Amino acid sequence: MAEYKVYVTRNIPTPGLDLLAQHFEITSYECDDAIPHTTLVEALKEKPYDALYCMLTDTIDAEVLDAAVTLSLYTNQRKLCKRGKKGGVRVYYRRKALKPPLPAIMTGIAGLDELSTNTRFLSEYREAGLICITETWFTENCPDSGINIDGFSVYRSDRTAESGKTRGGGVCAYINNKWCNNNNTHVTERTCTQDMEVLSLSLRPYYLPREFPKVNLNVVYAPPQANAKRAEDYLSNLIHEQQNKSPDSAILITGDFNHSTLESSLPTFLPIREMLHKKREDFRFVLWQRSRRLP
Image (cartoon, rainbow, N blue to C red; front, side):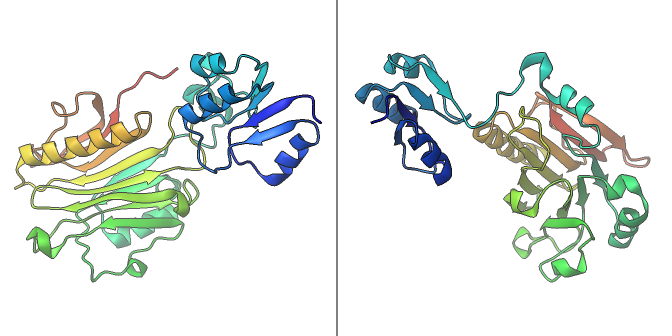
């Protein structure tokens, strides 16, 4: 009989369990999902364990340690990550300058032919992680095959008949396949109304600092005739919902806001880039990003 008892908090691959079983008495939580905190505490109280094999996502707090009075070791299946000044976005970028942690973003209003040409011959377009377009004029009669660009996956929110619009509108986002895999990109919101058009994507790219579990991208078009108050309220509620679901995610808001603004409804977001049209002072094409202190 094994001298030491080990509790495993996740259903890890069989070879790993077999290796542990050769030297220890193993008890594991038979589920692929994360173990609930209360279940872990109760399991450690029921039986004395010498070691706890846990995941990085498991919460090992004072309550867990108090429940396992005989516990002398807890570990996980990944090496310890550097924290503080030795980890973070800035250090990551210095060490991996050719693999940017956050995407280069191209935004604007452009024709499809022009955009296709730019991605072929201009490196800033070809290497961009995200290309966000407003006023596409796309409808359900425009197939994806007719608007695809080599090396990019397209996601779109088209003008709909239910919105009452007969011309203009539509937003889309081209995701560089070298920056984010298609399987890690999910549409979370498609909206087309008289006041606001929104396409929201949840992205988990190949290279992302641990400060950000994912990237929430919001491509927005507020028509010139839109009710600014209703548009701002809708977008504010959408962003607050994203913040509640994933507080640490990187949230990007880009698009054509015209006379709408986020300064009062989302005061923690700052405009990174703002361009004013020469003839129309109320034209605003802004990229907003949540302000946060980096390590």
